[in-house]
Structure formats: C-alpha cells, structure tokens
Image 1 (cartoon, one colour):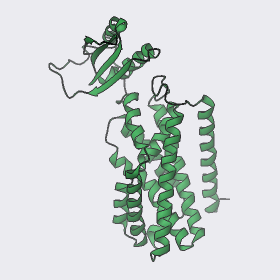
Image 2 (image 1 turned 180 degrees about the horizontal axis):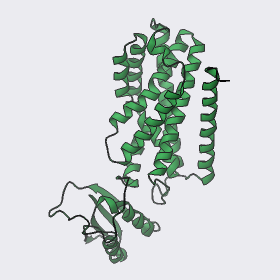
Image 3 (image 1 turned 120 degrees about the horizontal axis):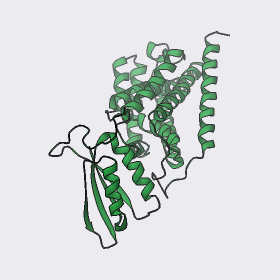
Image 4 (image 1 turned 135 degrees about the vertical axis):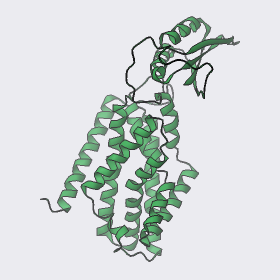
Length: 334
C-alpha cells in the first residue's frame, strides 16, 4: 500500500474524493484548508490501482501549478482491507509493482555524478585491475560488488522511454564519466603494474562472442525487472558490472601495456555490452508500460520528440548490427 496525499485548490476537493472512490482507494479524507486556498486530500491506495489513480490525478492537476502529489510507503493499516473489497472492477494481471513516479524518483538518483560515485568507480577499478593482473577471479568478482555502474545505464534507458531529455543527458554523462575513469585508472595501473597479458582473466575479455552479447542483454533486462517489481537491484547491479567493469578495466590495462591489438578486442566487447545492456533495458521498460507522462518533470526538463526516440533506437540497432558483424568477421565467419 501507499499513502497518496494530494495538495490542490479547495475547489477540487469533491472531485478528488470521488476520484479516490472510483479508483478503489481503501480510504480517503481531507485535511484542513490552508491559508493559500489549498486543501490536502489523503488516500490509502493498494498496489494494483496506484498507477491508474496517479495517472488520473496528474491529468486533473496538470494545469494547476500550485498542486502537488506526495507518495509515501505504508507498513500496515488496521483493519486490513479484504482482497478486492475496494476494487469494483475485475482483477487483471499487473507486472509492474512500482509506480512510474516512484521509479523516476529512485532511478534519477542513480544518474547523479558526484564524488561518491567517482570514488567507488576508482576503488572498484583498482580492485578489478589487481584481480585481472594477478589472475585472481575472487578479487575480480569482489570489485563488481562495489561498482556503481547499474544506476546511470538503467537511468539512460529509462529516460529514453519516458521522454526526459534532461535525465537522458545527465545519465549519459555519468555513464561516460564512469567508464572513462575506469579505463584511465586501469591504464595507469597497466603502465605501472607488471601485468601479464597472457593470463586467463585478461584474455577472456579480449575476444567478443555471442555468449557475451547474450549475457549483456540478460543483465539489462534483469536490472529493469528488479527495479519495476520492487525487488532489490543490488545483486542485479553485480550482473551489470560483470558486463561493463572487466572489459573496461582490461581495455585500460592493455593500453597501458602497449598491447593495442588485444585492447581493441576488449574495447569492442565493452562497446557491445554497453549497447546490449541499454537496448535490453529500454525494451523491458516499454514492455512494463513505461511511457511518457506529462506530470513528471513539468517545467524542469525538455522532452524528447518521437523522432529523438526513433533515431536513438535506430542508432543503437545499427551499432549493434555492426558489432555483431565485427564479431563474426573476427571469428572468421566470412
């Protein structure tokens, strides 16, 4: 359940209460009238009807600049509502358990480029580079646990689906900054550290094959499913780090050692994995019903046009096609 508090002009009070009843709210009541002519209408809403109610509220309040919707979690209510007692409509399957507004608030945090993000990138890169250099699988796995690469990548896919240009650019900048810092740190370590370019952990990331493409697609899809179903995404973040952190670290290590031919293969793997993670995440978001809403970011962001989304998708598909052809060519398929 969630508590939905709507602060809106008092003239909309009756309409808001009726809307709560129509959308199956467990309860709804009004607070006191504020000095500015606004009233607070509070609702207790079950999971299945939350998104439909929020969409209706946003459509009603889009032309009300003083209105605000506040969503808060509810641990329990007494008495507990009986199943279906507040929903006059027949049950229908729901796959997304988190509302679009809650998704936006949570995902946008992951696109923040700050000192903590960069420090975690540096620390995870140092751990990954040492593990790769020493051919120590356990250390490489440990580095993926602290790598914060899931947030900005998923945020970029979410922003392109939602149509938020500001969030897309911010998450893209955060992703590029993280990968750039990873490669740069690994280059420095590769230049200073006695790395053996012939060990298994390094060579495994210099040759792209279809299995790595499938892994990256699965990582992006799993990340979005975890976020939209309300399940913790920490372990899924490790899976995304598997697809991104080691290839980036290997690319930097090999460039630092001057092994440019092998570094090209690692860079190709990194590019393929980034595209696959974003594409998979984007299509799962669309499958989960994430689409543009007028309320989110009103007056704060500049929206994508439909052509922006089409051009981005075509660009990704063309890049992915080129990467697959490059993989097949490197493997001697033609």
